[in-house]
Length: 218
Image 1 (cartoon, one colour):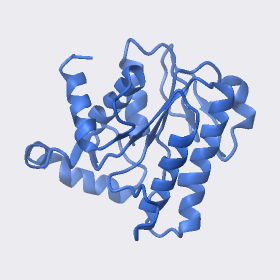
Image 2 (image 1 turned 90 degrees about the horizontal axis):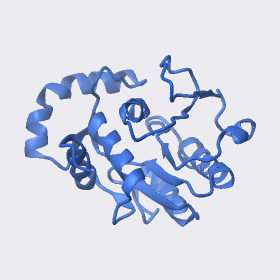
Image 3 (image 1 turned 90 degrees about the vertical axis):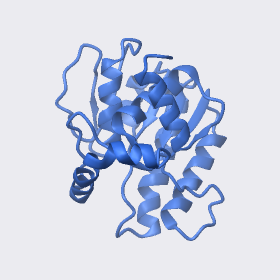
Image 4 (image 1 turned 180 degrees about the vertical axis):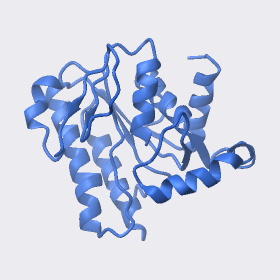
């Protein structure tokens, strides 16, 4: 869902020259600056390495829900795959800025009770230790989809449909708990372009940057 929104905002942003999503299934989109790399198995990107050169930024949005998964299964996707892609990009585009979509409540100590938070914390810590030009960890909480964007998880879509009508109220009462796909995606593009004082961005940071982009400021 977040990947869809990042793709949308990158294609709309006149300052983004080229967009190369690595996807498991074709997006169905067509745009002069879009080149899709479709690969069903993302565990290794070796066959694509020659096409992954010269990038300024990578926005890594892939992930799965921890619901019903063991720690080993969750680690395989949310840690092993992420770090594998990161290592590939360090070889092919060593000056890249890496932006990782993590989650609110991620456990940087890696010792907490919540399995998903420990795994995400380990992933963040490893990425921050790698020699990228810069790396930023985004920790969104509730994200309301806009512009027809939908999650691949059915019950998420039900939850979003129920929540969307009250988003204006939630954004006023609890501004640091909820954001939108548009605001989140614009914030990630802005950080890739301009940097940010801290490398772990919580909801307050995300909404502050996203609101600034909506108002037309850089």
